[in-house]
Structures are given as C-alpha cells and as structure tokens.
Image (cartoon, rainbow, N blue to C red; front, side):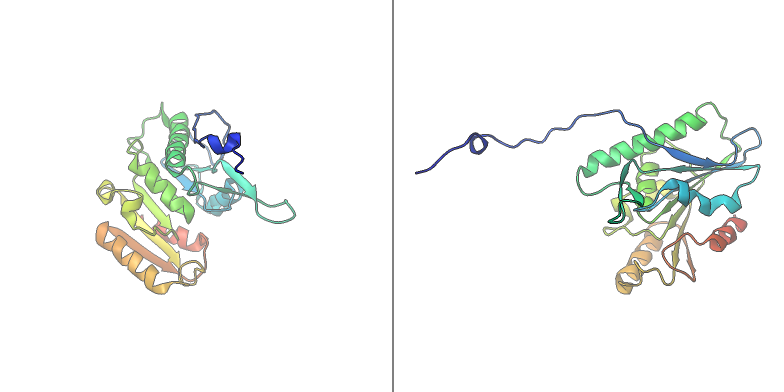
Length: 228
C-alpha cells in the first residue's frame, strides 16, 4: 500500500525577496578639505572591520582617510559563542550576494563622496584574502574611482577573470602582496605559483612577497606606500 502525502505532491520552489537591513563600517582619520588620499580596506573571511582597520592606523594622517566596510553576514568563530567573524559570501545565493555586496559598497562610497570633488584625491582600494574577490567585483562594476588596487593574499581558483575583466585594470596601478609563509598559499605551491604567473600575464601587476604569514604586514604596507 502506498501512502501519498501533501509533501510528496508539492514541488519545492525557491523564492528570493529584496530586504532592507543595517550594515556597518569603520573609519580612521577625518574626511575634509585637507584629504588627499582615501583608502577603502576590505577584510577577509572571519574578520571584523573594527579590528582589521587597526592595521592601517600607522598610515593615517591629516591628509589620509581610511574606510573599512564590514561584511553583513556574521557568525560565531568558536564553540563558546564569544568570538564573532564576518563573511562576504558563500556559494549559496552567490550571484545575489555579489550584487548585494556591490550595492552595499557603492552606498558607502556614494554617501561619503557624492558631493566631493575627487579630481585631486587619490583613492586606493585594498582587499585582504576573501576581500580580494569582493573588491575586484566591486571595481569591475565600474561605478567607482580607483587609482591603486592592492590584492593582499587573495586567491581566485578560476583566475582573475572570475572576478573582474583584466581590461578594467589597465589604468589602475595593481599590486599582489603575499607572505612567503602564508599558511593558505604555501600548502599548494604549484597552484599558487601558476596563479601568480597568470595574474602577471593578464594584468600589469607588481608582485611583492614579504616574510610572514596570512596577514596584512604593517611594515610591508608602509614600504609599499612609500614607493607610491
């Protein structure tokens, strides 16, 4: 005897709906008439912007303004439910999250800069780890100014074209920075070397390797900025 239930007769359908929610970002310095350089710094997986932005405290002065957006999806990092991290996206609702992230970052950009003359202001964008793909997709959307792009310890499994068309970076000074003992990159040296070689071939890229692990190394950052 076969029993047919309502669940067996129904079809599972996915639906999406646009909602309004609250996100946050942190800043260092003051945006005013003296500002000559603006940095957008985008954290990696499992981080929070309030801690990530501290990596940039030493480059802040009365002419430099730092903006650190925080990914809107947060989760607990430990079994004690004390440490919290954030993530820019997962494979679930991938395309929707890419669109939402771009929209969110554009909103921050426009709210801060919509009435400001950017002619004499340099805008630098730095993405760390997971943040690399996020900033590339944001820049690829083509609505923002970017003088320099710093991709720090990121990895795109399908190459740079997965996140941005290389042609869109032809007028952007672009860097790839990584630690020689990065625990996420040294585990697969052949893949990492091929990845960097592909980046160099496809975009006008400056590669910088420092002694260290998977982190934004502050002395390296200061050294790079000194060379601008």
